[in-house]
Each structure stands twice: as C-alpha cells, then as structure tokens.
Image (cartoon, rainbow, N blue to C red; front, side, top):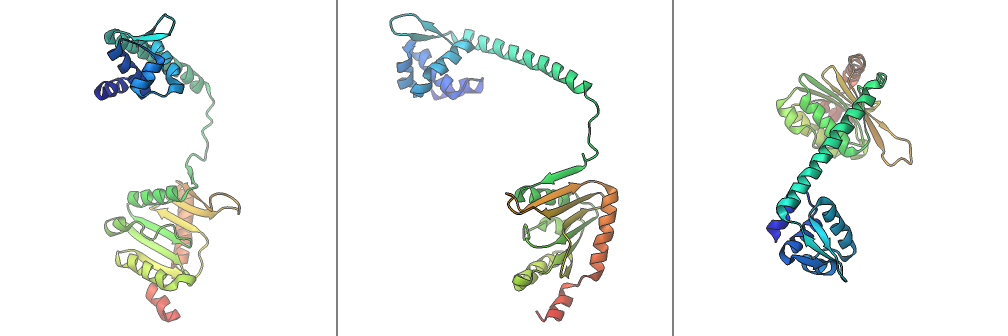
Amino acid sequence: MVNIISELVEIGLTEYEAKAYSVLLKQNVASATEITKIGNVPRGRIYDILNLLIEKGFCVTVPGAVKKFKAVNPEVAIHNLIELQKRKEQRMKETAIILKEVYDKQEDTSSSLEYVQVYTTKTSMIKKAEEMANNCNKVFRTFNKPPYASKKKYDNVIRKGPKFKAIYEIEENNLEEFISWVKYYEQRGEEIRLIEKLPLKLIISDENKIMFTLKNREGLKNDLTSIVVEHSDLTDALIELFEIYWEKSMFIEEFKIKEKV
C-alpha cells in the first residue's frame, strides 16, 4: 500500500486522497467510516477528501441505505486526471495572455530607485555582505563599528580574493578581545586601521556598489536597516570619504603603543 500511495502522490493526489483511493482499490466498495478506519484518514475530513476524488474522477458514489464509494478503474481515473491537468494548463496559458496585456498597457513606471535594495534582518544583511565580498574583484573597503554583526566574516575571501581595507571603530568596553579579533584578520591579509569614531557602518565593493547600515527608531522590531546602492556617483563620493578616514586612523600597533595595551 505504501508504494501505491507514493505513486498516487507523485502524479498529483494528496496523501489522504491517495490513502482513500488505495482502500477503494482493495475493498471495491466501502463506506466513509470504513475508509477512515482502514486508510487512517481523518474522520472530520473524509467527505471532503472523497468529494475531491469524485471531482478528479477517481471514485463514484454507490446509492443505498448507507452511502458508499467505489473506485474508478485506474486507467480511466488517471486519464481523467490528465484531462483535468490539461484544462488547468490551458487556463494558466489564457490567464498569462490576459495578464501580459495588462502589463504591456502600463505606463513605464520603473523607478529611478531600482538600483536600491533594503535589508532589515541580521541574517539578510550578513548574507548580502558576504555576497558583495565574494563578487568583489579589486578593493573591498569597510567601515566597521559596534554592534558587530559577525566576527567570522569573509575569512576565505580575504585569503584568496581582492584587497581588503578595513577601518574599525575601537570597542573600548571590550578592548582585549577587540584587539585579538582585528589582529586575527590582519594576519589573514586584511589591511586594518583603528579609529575612535566612525559615522556609520559601510561597505564599498570595488567602484560600483555600496552597503550602509543605519540605526532604526526605538520601538521598531529590527534595530538596524541596511541599504545597498549600485551607483558610481555615490560610490566615488564614499570612496573619498573612506580615504579621508583611512588617513587619520591608526595602525593596530600604533594604537597599542598609544594606549599601552
């Protein structure tokens, strides 16, 4: 019975429909109660299931004092299902034509902001940042500031990919671990400098894509929102901003000497 049910589900019946039909195949004629008990089909749904089988051409009712059901010959039943699917496919094609006519009649409402994407969950932000790192060819620049989304970022990409230049806002309340963490990435090839304060979280991938993260208003479900923009004008301006901060920031060893860490 398990193989029969699997095959029926594969061709488009639900599991409960397949169980009910498999009972009818073996019993020839059965009541709803019998199908429920033998096929382990929920009592409260049995008549809905049987009505769907009738609609799909897999069973018929047998008149009598107690209403019973009989399986339709499988060859006929499957032919009925094929015809039903053909009708659905034809309806889909007709619907597609209607929708395309509506689509083609629209005015060009494409937004000048199509190059902007918004991310509101931590998982989506991390995933997008990793995607930008993987697709970077030349230089990957970042402003990094607390709260840090991930302390295991871009590891494989740093070792084999483009040049990575990163400025980190110093995490004063967690200094020892912070220094250990940034040293870890410096040893893997990331060019790192430290600074007391950064204006925002920022990623610049090559010269055509940026991602910046902003704090949301208090009370919102998500603390941060990240915005990705693909626009060379804005990217050029932010590269200049990055270089200004790069010049006034410190090397890790320079900071350690200054702060006697």
